[in-house]
Amino acid sequence: MIIIVCLDDNGGMTFNHRRQSRDRAVTERIRQIARGKKLWMNSYSYKLYGDIEGAETIGAEDFLDRAGTGELCLLETGRLAGVEAKIEEVIVFGWNRTYPSDFRLDLELSGFSRTDVREFPGASHEKITEARYVRRIASTT
Image (cartoon, rainbow, N blue to C red; front, side):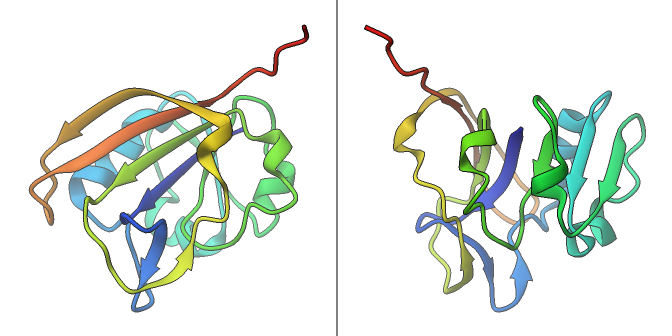
């Protein structure tokens, strides 16, 4: 599964009970990534992202357990504990700021390699960083 998450510099996913992903430019980018794919999320996220043209969006509280190989999962709240082994890739939208967070990402990215870093202007922030982290394959030698 491929996790999509929006984070501040300390790994915060929400602040003052508000979602980090609430930026028009980020929302549109997530919609672009999801086109032609299956995108899983919980009911909280489904309220904002539920109808993406060209994507199969599924809202379910157990979405992390149900998502399959190569399928996208939007994580705004909740924990990844217990599903770490299923994660192939993580797409991080970074705000390049620090906020007092309510939820933090509970995944250590040290087992992943950062690739495809790009920056773009957001509606609420002048610079948003999108980075992909791909799971490193353990050596068999």
